[in-house]
Length: 594
Ligand code: F6R
Image 1 (tube, protein in one colour):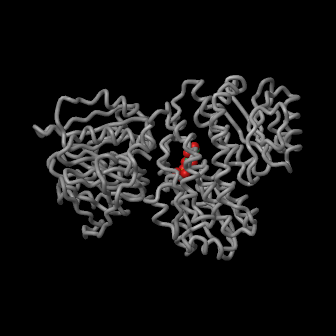
Image 2 (image 1 turned 90 degrees about the vertical axis):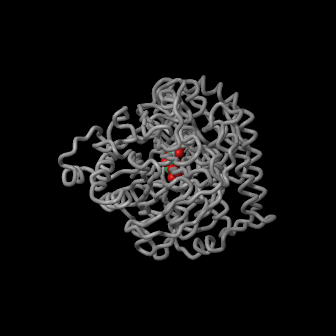
Image 3 (image 1 turned 45 degrees about the horizontal axis):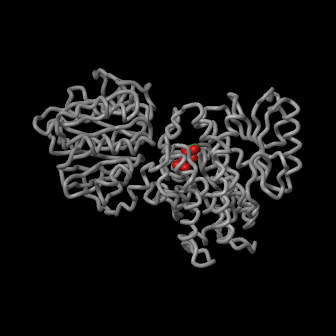
């Protein structure tokens, strides 16, 4: 993970880098650092420490002007988050500063073969890069030294590099980790994500793997690893500045929960012409031609995938499997004759998914990515992609991307369905019903105070509600740190019921008439063992003491509603405990390591 921002130009490098890092904190926030050159001298200053970018800002010297710098916000992979392991890292003689996003798989081997004499300061894999570049810079130009180093690195990297002996240049290169250039007449930004450039650049250049960039103020050259210039595409930044600010909300997560009805309406506008679905013909054709769909995803996106499976199988009669991306990449199941692989990813950068995509591409299979980031690696590398149009999702805990992914999956499944529903109308109904739940958020906050009093919790449900329970429990555990399990209600009695004791919170999701009675009898089983039960049910099957009653919608769309109270439950449980809701511990939003 980690976020990188670098700048060389006429503007204030410190402001651009610090603001950029704040926007990239979703990529990791264990520690942060910056190296800046003083405009009036050849002096470079480094500020870095464990903690957030706000802390970095407070320890950075603001008394000098700077037009060149590189910064980093870290999600630790090698070495604990402390001052020494924070980036930038410096080469042995102090000539090069390097910030890195990715993992160098062969760093130990490089240490023992190429850098035997070097004394290492940190526990990171990154430090080998700084030392190698310096070592080769004695024998060749800096560009060649960086490209030579690239040729030795195995693994993933996005790098921004400063040569303190030549402050008129800034260097960058990448393989597997995302990196782009934000371009402007008065300077060039290097960043892990276009969000860091919003407000400073209107155009950007996404970089391909194994490319190297040399920047000298207003111009840049992009080369491949052997030094041959490569063509590139300049794209327009179309992210609205207000979309990446919290506005009136106390947290991005609260803002993003509230945005869900608007996101559904945006998707309707994007993918409907009147009552007709308009999708890229190749996408529909790819699904229709396949004999089995394989959804590959991680975390919340995988939970959306489970709902997708129900939609494809029940609406469109297409067999569908869901696979954990990190498992699928190296342990492929027996495949059908005409498989289609659907990669679902909010960020479009998740390394576990990319490993799977690389594998299936090598075997000649077809792929489709469903993502929120149309410029992402997974969008670029799959045969087709569908954008979910959720808008930038900043909170680490995914909310609106999950509902948007399900809506897109519903649209794809509907395209092949013989069910005659008015999809546009049904989705519009869902948007209104979500607003009805949002209106009850204060009441849900009270329920959280009353029910979520323990260190553990269970969500139980059956059928499609079970998959909603998986997402509900992931949301709760990741931001409130309450140990939560999503369980198939009928399975509890086969062992896990042993964990139920007095006042253990058990939350049931019941949205399907066919399993209503069964789930309620499982609830009675836990109640009689002391559990405190809270029920989320739909109006037509609710009972008088169910605490959260939601509207009835087309049954297969109920997960789009049942998840909303669960998102609020997670939010208020974390708020009650005083945790950092948007940046929960140990997590990062874009998981670019395997
Ligand atoms: C949970 C969450 C994660 C992500 C997972 C996959 O709230 O956000 O579980 O869903 O890391 O990320 P993407 O969807 O970007 O591939």
